[in-house]
Length: 339
Image (cartoon, rainbow, N blue to C red; front, side, top):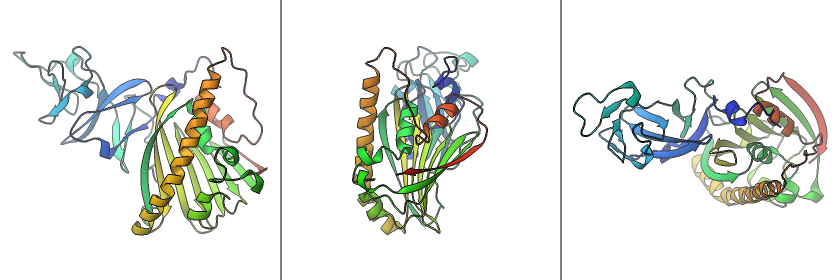
């Protein structure tokens, strides 16, 4: 768990997060919430800008305004701001509207692979790696969004944990009566942890049998600050990858951007994603229900007892260390488990 003197949001704040799909940002201001703070995004001829979602005049939300003449205009008194945040117009004022206190503070923002990334810090950490886990060509990509109500570590662990799939996703992902002996290698670095699984030729549920070829290995990865990734490979190449970018709106609610990548030409890939989509969405519904129930049950206890883990809870200890802002030394270990 996080030390009492190290708040999760203080650890996350310097990092970049996906806050929207590029296609969501059109001709109107777009409101998002990141780490408990309202943010407004707006497009202009020079690109895309992000600001705290409040006009400096009376703190009216700028996302309730509009974009006029390439400027973001407040819906309360009409103050207008350019893409850099400079106040360009105050209706009724005779004289120069630009004063430092009247300007907006621009937040770092960029677009890549159809996603909008933002940070709340003026000098954020290095930009994240490119979103796709696969080569640019030969793969079809589909992006979904969903919302999850849960503790961030619980939500990340849930996506990367294989040991619950026999029960929560029985038949879709794995089945309890068809376990296989699997080799797991855990590798942790300063900003990530990865588990490589070998020996599971393919999951025994419908998703693997219908949409995946023979598997040689799979990977579960966590990348700071809040990205979870599942990658499935045969002997030659990656066949399927699922990347989930968690965007914490507040401490218990997260918007999740899920990128599904499948090996295929555009037509076959489109057909595969149309067919596999309902199965993945059903898995997501099941996980959301489990996380909601877990959170509700914890709230019943004024002082919840410590959770009990075992050596097959591969991700949780590393998630807790990394999200506590700990400087983690590189680590590698191997073990066997029935998965």
